[in-house]
Length: 264
Image (cartoon, rainbow, N blue to C red; front, side, top):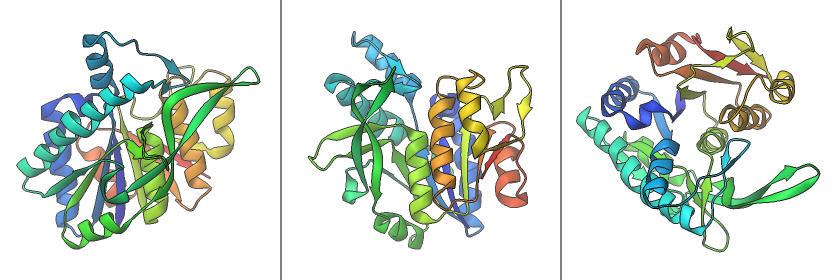
């Protein structure tokens, strides 16, 4: 089975949680599954930007990224956070390869802007994946190595662009024709206005959930990328918590989702 897992939130920041997740994913590789990990690191990036006196701004869950912010993203995401995940896998006895979009021509991205009251707002060095070169993933699978991918890509001009990690995980899942795409989140799923977990959300419901304000902030790009992904061949997407430890196993081994399953 081809499995793409996007990891964000506290799971990126807490060393003990990283080790727990790395052990679980390593067990899937031992069972013969093909695993690719995509990580975020927004909180760590915001913290570093604050220490450097660089203001952080968002638009509908996407970080507005000027040149200085982009350079710090390279340092934090492709550097510190990425190598922490590699270390967690190595501690679990699983070989891992930490990469970013520019490595081996892995991820080509195009700049995007955002709509605001009928006009377009520049997001700076923010991109969306336009092409995934799967050769590196295929090589890693043959060697039983887990690729750990930082959410950055190269433009056609050779500029690094900051990519929303949900978008990147979705694009990789489509390129690999993955059997499973799972988002590990703090929320553990999509919740309605009454704080009730929605076990199942269809693509057709997503625009209403966004317009009505039921979903906000980082869940907006997550659901939008889910809608695009389901239209491109991935059958279903699971948004789950990294706790309890068996949550991911339920998705991979039993096909059941303890969080929210996004379907066509």
